[in-house]
Structures are given as structure tokens and as C-alpha cells.
Image (cartoon, rainbow, N blue to C red; front, side, top):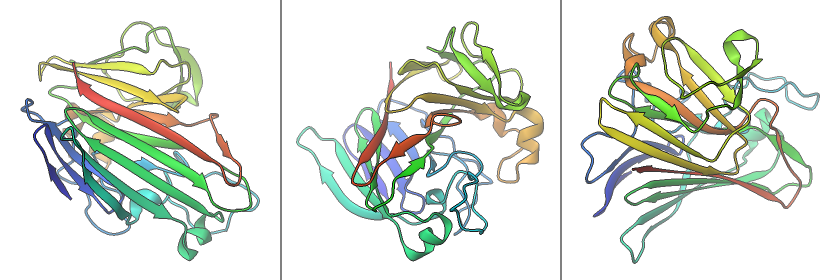
Length: 277
């Protein structure tokens, strides 16, 4: 789905409900990174843009009532087709797209719960995404989740992430040991951090593209920072060996120990906004 209005352009994939491109009209570079080696085929996740990790982040949880079938990392909605519920042009010129995803017999074979997902995407001079999870069944369920955004950057070795100074994170490379972040986040090696003591306002400083992207969020208790660096990029089949230089993942998330419990007939929202300062 191609969206063009007076403020920005965007590409949204109905497969995975995934924003693949967003570019305000006054910007020369896209906000989103997409790997040239990305898979665009059923059953595979698309490497780049904003994949939706749901109803779990990372490896599937082990629960007594879970079916004994293969369950993909980061959940199943990023490997599935969504429905277009509405496309609206608002009076202010923004474009609002609403996508939906509901449980089916196939999803219940993987995850035995009834649910409704609503994804609202607002294309303006900024990009806003809100993910609604509604429990439509009679049993409570718990989720972890993330908006797994791949930001396109000019040179990953130069970027800084501001707003997580003096916060604690779990280092996934070191068996989830707890570490305190000192100063701005920079990249010089493989990085895979789940920040647990967060603010809801970050800035991605990208000197090579001469821009700063402001990131605000709500509903999330974590921010995940990921870059596979040299060895990781070379080992991942749907990345080029040099792709690590061109992106940083900053993910609005409820992950690790931050499990969201949703009772029957209840709902939960997670949202984020990206804009150029």
C-alpha cells in the first residue's frame, strides 16, 4: 500500500502489517531501513521497516497449556496477512490507515487464545503507530510485544541515542546481566540491550544524514537497542555483510520480565511517534 499526501510518503505491507517506508516531504532520506536481501515471501519475516513482534518477543514462551508445535521467534503476526479496516484522509491532510488481525483456527493451533489486534498508522509530517490488543475470549492471557523499528542511518558508527543515560539494561549477549548505561548510547560492537528503566522520549542523532529523529512512546516498559555488527550481519542470511553500518533498531517494547496480562474483555495499547527535530 503506497500512501502519498502533502506531508509525507509511506509504504505499508498488508503482509505483516508492516511499515516499510516513511519519508516526510522535506527529508531526502527515508526513516526506514530495508535490507536488499530481505525475504518477501509467505512464512518469512521482512528484514527492515517496523516488524510487529506479538504475542511474544524473542523465543516463544514455554507454558503448560501451549500446543506442542513449532512457534516462530517474535510471534506469528509478522508472518501473516492483515486486513485493511479503513483508510481515511483527515481534514488536516493526514492519512490514517487501520489494519486488523484476529485469531483463526490456525493461530489457535499456535497460541490457544481469542484476540483482536488493531493497528493504527498515521502518516503526517511525523509517523504515529498504535497497536491495540483486545482479549475477546473467556480466558486471561499474557503477552510480550515490540514495534521492532529498523531506523535508516547514514553511518551506524557515528549515531548517538539520547535519553537512556543512567538507565539500567539487560545485556542479552551476557546472559541478561544487569548493566547501567553511562552517557549516550553509541555503537562500536554487537549491541543487544533491553532497557528496563526508561523515559518515553528519545532522540536518535544521525550526523551523517544531518538529522535528529525524536521518538516518543506510551504503553511500553522497555526500549530494545539492537545492531548485529560485523559478524552478526555477515551471519544473518537476509542481511548483507555491510548492512550493520546502515541501521540501528530502537524498539518500543514490553519484553523480558515486563509481561502484559490482559483479562477477558480488556485491552492494552502501545504506541510510538517518530518525527524530525
